[in-house]
Length: 353
Image (cartoon, rainbow, N blue to C red; front, top):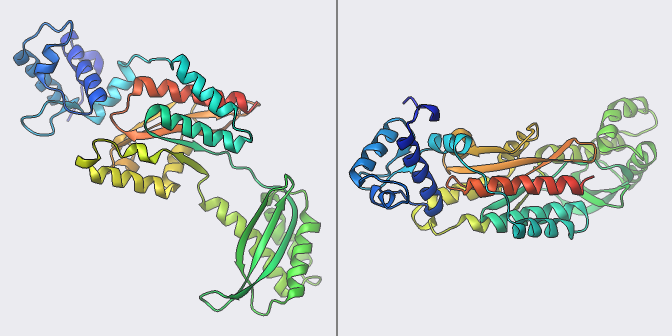
């Protein structure tokens, strides 16, 4: 079906279309001709309005969920409305205060990012999301501690413990090569700590193959295997684990959930997986302004019928380091939420300077 550009709609069709979209976004239910006939400035009979709505439906901008219902915008119609007709509403003084206060009083940057996600969730009645900048840990100390027992494959395991230069401590469970003794655990930990202290994990990985190969005579086979497994446990985790903070999923289970349970379930499943949502958010990293993804425009939401509004935030050098946004049903209050997300991104950017 060919979709008519907004510039080709006459004034009457444009007014009816705008009213249908605004009423639908406010109520979440299809809008009937009788409701529109009572709107200020609309001097048309319900029958005349129905004719206009039928024309808009034929143009691919409106749809009727069933024969006797009113009309609601299609995803294409929503996109046209957002891009060409919507009048933005700047965040209120109170909304700005809440965002700035929640972000500014949250201590470490990680807490501030979580607070930004929570603030957006509360103000928008959606789920708030923040894509956290990936920070490569700088090595200070590395050690292996043996664990009792065996895994399902009958292999012994050890806890690989990494201490970062900022004092952070992380650990991973790694399988031990057969025949690994206590001396190999100590040797491998000392090798990493002494040779690669002060390097990021990425830099240590780049030197791994070259330096371990050169020291083949100085390291026994078990120690070499431990070094490779120890660093790999972090690189694999960073590559596969989305660094995404999500707050307010419960907001998605709204009053319409009882009639749209499958949509809500699918959306919650999408959020639980995080990886695909993170990829979507990452696509906004290259944007210079707020990006809006409506429904099945993105294949991730082809079933759940959701929308995402996402805006990049920057560090002190002006580089984009993360993305903040919201996810909710396609009937979002775009005019209010888009500026709210943009203001939150600006607030985070000021904090990162």
